Length: 395
Image (cartoon, rainbow, N blue to C red; front, top):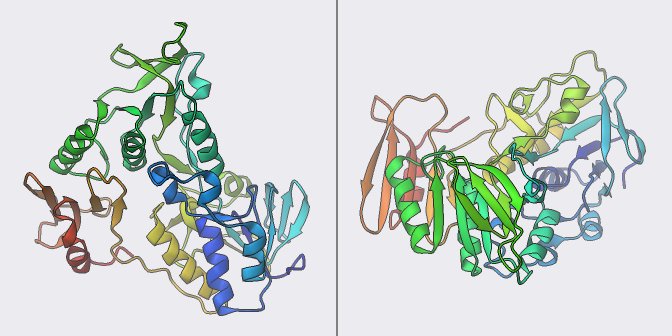
């Protein structure tokens, strides 16, 4: 176990934080590792939250490794239920709800927080977000009520679409609202998005594009719906539960208060190291959803694992730059199997789409004809590996 003032201290016990601990322990059996987390400290796969209903998984069943087992497996200390309140860079001190903790090497793995929409009405406070296993437990409890039959989802992005498919598989009526003109508006080209919409609508999902929720009020009719949702076009929808899936923002609050550089995420170099002014004998790193590496904030599993492996080597004494190969993202929508490898932001080029009744093959090529991204739906999915092999590394 870890003695205060030595070794590596990790703030956060999500995929990023625990993966760093696991990778570091593979390289160094002796270095003290301490995780400080406001959560229970156990390990679960966050991506599984958006398709757990169809899989019949409860929150308890999603927890893969409880805290006690994780501590024993990795020979680490996990301070669960402890909230970090301030980072003192000079002298290497964390202030927490359970007292002060000294550190030499600090890893910030604080994750991301759901974006909250400005919605009016006495039902706005009841809007749920599922960004954590505890959120999922509340969500499942609400869904278990016999009065809940109709679910509204705010946001038709990756997570919103996955939840829509999952809830339909569970027998719920689902309506999805998004101010964008299509599903996965930031990721899919037009024909691929239209194909996904068609397949999800065939499964029973109802989409409302070009509108957002403005007001959510408790319904007064006995035996009717629980809420009245008014959209930005003035239409009223009767729903029993509202789930917000409009996106996440990196949790940079501790970093900002400590004076670390922050853009969208906590700014790091390719070794995940933060720029620390006037601090001696301490190093600070950021990893996962909260980190912005060379301008890239990528809240997906593959880049997080690449970060964890590289950072573990650096922490073990072998400075290592993180490398990002092409990293396709699989969308968990069984009604429309989809994989996306979006082109890098700012890269010039055009989408070319080939659509059939069974799928869509979309490739993004630069002016010189080189492949820079792709999206595959349905029958086109088997091309994933071949196309990914043709893409240049992202970093």
